[in-house]
Length: 324
Image (cartoon, rainbow, N blue to C red; front, side, top):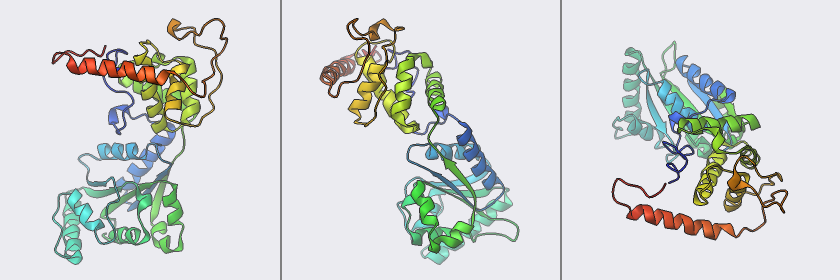
């Protein structure tokens, strides 16, 4: 909607793990290298743990890209399976028919894995949101790692999930599975500098630059996001939308503060002087500093402006957008 207004070629703060926007911090690079190395060395099990929104799925998508042509991959993004259906889910993801019984499905899978090994490839199963798996399902997954030869594992399994997964694996019932975790990758919130670099990277990938966000706006995003990339995306998207609705050429502190309020993120943003680099964002001379009010009269006005512009776009001739 605001792409043309801000001279963007695409959406910089999307909600899907687009490889074009992947920003590899030091810790993300280490986690990615750890998983890839474990798979290449046929170590069997690997674990990726991090709070929601830190980029676990993005790393899994990068793993898939890196393994193209080197492995067959079953990616299960949602834990919609249990002990009795996990193997069937894996087979379906690989395009293989499940057998009429669990034993026959195991046979189908084993024959597939051995043929794959003869071709020089391996099979990788990526299980996202694994913190929601119960103990019996985790045990069934562990049993699948028994597909092996005397020299290597035929199946490589990556469990990715929130810290609750690590807590589950500490239980006595998971001792055998825990012992098989050869490598563990961990993700933590981004540092302040990394948040700014992350925003710059995504804006550059979308055809713009970090100068689109004024310095005080960047500081506000850092404070409000707590270093969580998903929060950064959400705040920046909404701040851009607000700035666009008010016909600003840059995103200022007020726009980020308004976005944070609209998202109901309970964050204390610092009191800052308005940015002088953008005349549209200057406060009246009688107001030496800006503090976000507890309630703002702007949202209704902004919503009306946005509605008008969206409707104008919808009624514009085909091939011509009114959202400029």
